[in-house]
Length: 371
Figure 1 (cartoon, helix red, strand yellow):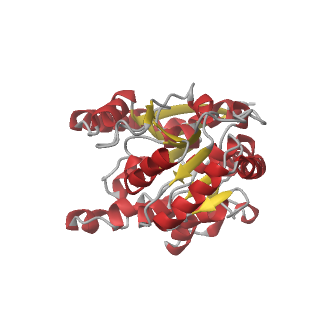
Figure 2 (tube, rainbow, N blue to C red):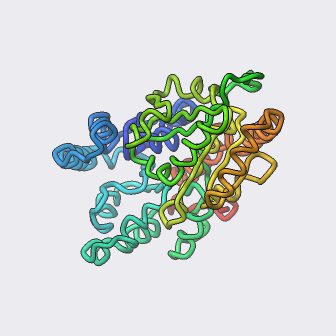
Figure 3 (spheres, rainbow, N blue to C red):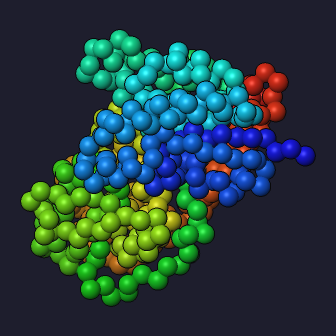
């Protein structure tokens, strides 16, 4: 029996967090039932330039667009289902993308509030031409997969039929996070950790003075994974490069995981992947009550939601001083991930989306599939 051919059109290569989490980690799991192919828009060179130099190489962007366009013109009609991460081409109008995608049923996947890049832009030109781009793409798709309630509600408010909409959270492969990681019973220092990238570390800036204070007043070390050195704080924190191979080992050395966010529209679309990683590693978390963080973190159960510097200081000090509390909250967080944020859990839902779109004559999803 022929397997359905599925094309993943990702934003990045596997070293890009969103593409890795939403697509590449599912390949071994889904390959049993589908013939899978991937084509990234931006390759490793672009990401390395972005992370190391903190700029977007215009030549690489142009080359990436041309390479994808040639690929689509040659190959797109050969697949039973096409899954697009966010959009085919950033800053290109929707009608051009829907025209290219007309040959195959397509699914859109969102784990960020991509629409706000356009509809909240300060540029009048972008607002005029692209304000409704994501809304138009969603309504043209055979199905839409979104990572959280904020994105789900946006799709509904944009007129997307709930029958064509499925909420699938960002998840971890728990096989990489052994249960019962032995934490340091008498730590030399309590490690407060953050994991991310240079592009996302701006959310740390309101926190750095407080984190430095804790290193001076408490037995605390702050470890920032994937971040570039922060001006004025190079000697205050420990900076560690991120690699896929080392991330779980590094997380196992944390005692507390943090996820500060700014209360702004784009941040509301985040899927709390950091929190899910921390909890998978058995860590208590302290986070900003923004977006899906509010649903995942329960105060005093698996972590704390902190508003303002006073609460951040209070909750971090409480966890730093109480090893037993850290252990209790960490175990509860791990249980939550085991029940709701695993590769198997999300993979089953993604499989259903793919199967129903691939096998539907009119490319619609049956009523029992909607959220």
